[in-house]
Length: 89
Image 1 (cartoon, rainbow, N blue to C red):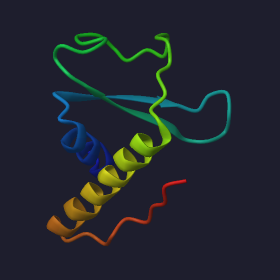
Image 2: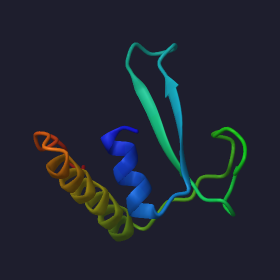
Image 3: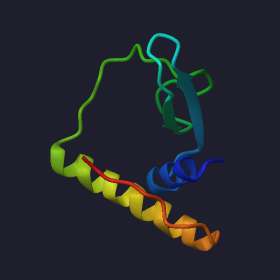
């Protein structure tokens, strides 16, 4: 599991992570790391982008992002890896 996926999974207590990788229409590498829980949406099936969007309040979004980044830093340190370069915009 990638460092980012492991950090997301541990931060939100996911039961599993789904990956979706795109890039055929635009020339860039585009990855979704989707945490899923057993009683949550789309459990047991692939991730799809067809559900209505839910936006977190700005403060909650930033707090979640900071928690994921902090977990990535901790995981990298545990594994003896260089600190990841990241920013939350």
